[in-house]
Length: 198
Image (cartoon, rainbow, N blue to C red; front, side):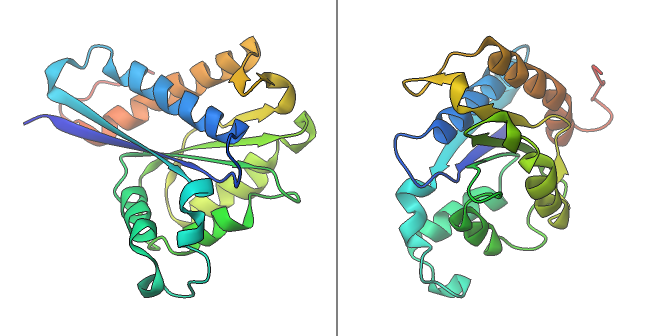
């Protein structure tokens, strides 16, 4: 029976089209490509992209998880069962969007223990790049998730017409993925069979 990797990306952008969503999708695709190399038929990869611009209204107004609409509950279950979680948000008033935080307020406190999480953000300029360390990493440390070593930050200048055009950003994504792949492989491969490539 093949091992199944579920890669779930969450875009905290409230708009569509969105540079944040483009970034999240690019990282997701890069992980799929990297994990597929040399995996053979014993590995099955499932992917899901959750865009808050689409499902955000299904979370609004709810104070308890029992009040959530079905689409919101489905999104939470995908997040909680992910093998790899990719989270991305635009910088909004020095933090991730309020709706992004609202969604993760509903995630089970112990649901993400030891789940690898790739942190990503977008902003108007490089001045906001530390959001990954100051906002994202503490949040997912609370969940006892494994935040991957390299986060990915992108500024407006890295995009042209909602396409990534910056070679430096492409390289950063590649580095983040290559550093993260051994962590993800170790979560789906028995320890006796796993050989680190670090």
